[in-house]
Image (cartoon, rainbow, N blue to C red):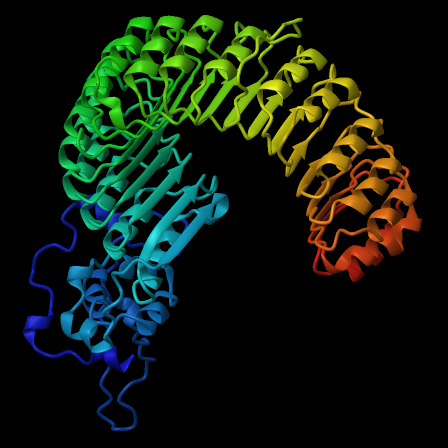
Amino acid sequence: MSKVFSFTGSDDFFTGRSLYPNPKEAGLFLSLGLQEYAYKPLQKRPRVSVPFDFSGEKLFDQKQPETSIETLPDECLFEILRRLPEGQDRSLCASVSKRWLMLLSSICKNEICSNASTKNGNDDSDEGYLSRSLDGKEATDVRLAAIAVGTASRGGLGKLSILRSNSDRPLTDVGLKAVGRGCPSLKFLSIWDVATISDDGLVAIANGCHQLEKLDLCKMPTISDKALIAVAKNCPKLNWLSIESCPNIGNEGLKAIGKLCPNLRSVSIKNCPGVGDQGIAGMVSAASFVLTNVTLESLAVSDYSLAVIGQYGLVVTNLVLNSLANVTERGFWVMANGHALQKLTSLTIGSCPGVTDVGLEAIGKGCPNVKNFELRKCPFLSDNGLVSFTKAAPSIESLQLEECHRVTQLGLVGVLFYCSAKLKALTLVRCYGIKDMNLVLPAVSPCESVSSLSILNCPGVGNSTLAVVGKLCPLLQKLELVGLEGVTDTGFLSLLEGSKASLTNVNLRGCINLTDAGVLSMIKLHGSTLDELNLNCCKKVSDASLTAIAGNCPVLTDLDVSRCAITDAGITAIAHGVQLNLEVLCLAGCNSVTNKSLQALKKMGDSLQGLNIKNCKSLSSRTVDKLIDHLWMCNILF
């Protein structure tokens, strides 16, 4: 503590102005009493009456009161603490008491005496190397104050994430103000689901953290445009903004961000009822030369916002539009014909009733460089619109349709007929309109660019559809057929027979009518290249398939045979097979695998990194313990 009292001269002391520009901020400095966040002025020290003894025996006959630095008022202690050099001394003083911690956290960087800070030589304190994440009970004002004091001399706080708050001692603006004062190097701030933080806390962050680049706010009911405007005025380096479920944020804040943040590149606005066309249009038009990523979801915007995006989205490369109930067919048509989205490469549209055949065709023509396109829950899109889009989109590489129930097998075939030579991946998810049809295909060239096909939980897809796909996609490398109960060995074999390439990744999860015959055929044709194989819930697959895998799949690294009809014999076959690099093995729900498989599983321990034996009821707890002891480098789920 000798350093604390090493200063001299009148220039070192407080100049006479009030320590608290705002009288309310006096509440920052508290003791450990019950009134945790209330300011109580220190009482005057009583005068001590000193009795004189003229007899000379004793000068005092009463005990002198003990002197302590704690008797100093906050103003004096503030002046002492701000002269501490940054580093261990400040951290040690912060641990003395809550009062000292809160006083230290109230000291701004520019209020620390320069001679003390330079003496310690902490030139890297503003680099922002450190990251802190608080969840639930960890998120308190005291914890944030400690972070603000403790990280200053250790590289500086660069990233702070707060998820929920302590219900007993909720996080308030006091904690954020401490960060704003003590962490000027902060670049990323994420706050989710903290209702006790108001605009004042974020304003303090904006005033003190001018290096802020990323701001993520979710479920913050008390944050308004005032906070966003403060961020816009004080944080010119802001380039990434995400706002979700913040009902009091409206148009003015977004317009200020677009106008005053020249580096703004990514914006995501979700479920904010106060945001309308003026906010989106003002932000997009002001940031037209820098904004590359835009996400709009569950907003009360109209066709006007999409028209502005189509007119001013000059450098937008990634656009996500979800749950825009007020946008009509005209909005998508105008957006596509605005001719600004020439650099757009990724487009996702979901739950937008305004997506129709006309709008989708316009998007294909107006956005010529789109490579990745996802359509979700578009009830008015039909085969005609999908095929027209495919014809008009010359650069499409990945196409995903989810819950587009008016798309049928004709639309699927049309996509594969007319797609550009660049299409590589096609994904269908819960498209109930795709059902088997007896189609006679004309003599056309197959789509040899498609290397990945995923059909997930489309109950109408059966053997006929797979036969058509097999003829049109002969060069598949990745194949996912998930939850297709109508597919049997016959349809699967017809798909394999049309294949001229080597499959590397196959997922047949939930194809309950596939048997060993289909798996054996696949192993015979593609076993030498298979890297991942998922047979989860293929209940008719047994040890015969595992024996074939053991002898013909030398590069297999991931095998899932959960809930299959396999026994100890199949596990033994795998253990003695050619899989030298098998890293993940899933046996969940295989009730016929017993304790007899212990040695076989141990044998695979040299390469296994993950083993799933959940719900293997025939494996005893003793066997599981032995596996855990032996396979100590393997992550075992049981």
